[in-house]
Image (cartoon, rainbow, N blue to C red):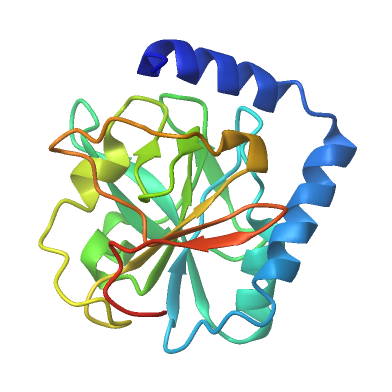
Length: 202
């Protein structure tokens, strides 16, 4: 099994090497896969600002806005940053760059939600496997933020974690560490994968 650091370097390089047209086509394909996927009672949906070649969630977020749902983006919290809170975001709203040069909504901290207050979270990834184990960028921000008891898989009780990625990011097996928070599902330009660790459907 390839080690996590080597796999991360390899897949990040592949991701960054995609042309803008390929990334746009993949983002639209992901949105089409989710077009008839029920968002059920998901009112508060967190996305992310795509960087480093990540699958762009904007087409999915645009659907959420059209349907009157609330959209949030992650912001780093703690000193040094240890976890995430989620700030409300509308297209064109003011942004500021965090210590990793990633844009964040420029809002007061009191407007931000805790992770457990969300309904659906679109999660970036570097790799994933058939059990929902996720390899991220290595900072651990999502794992720390969603480490609260997961409980039953119902919208409104805890967030449904939906990874967004490219098909080449699917790998045979990842080693799940004790602190890793598994995904409920992953959608790529080719398919929607739902995992057995999820106790119900979104």
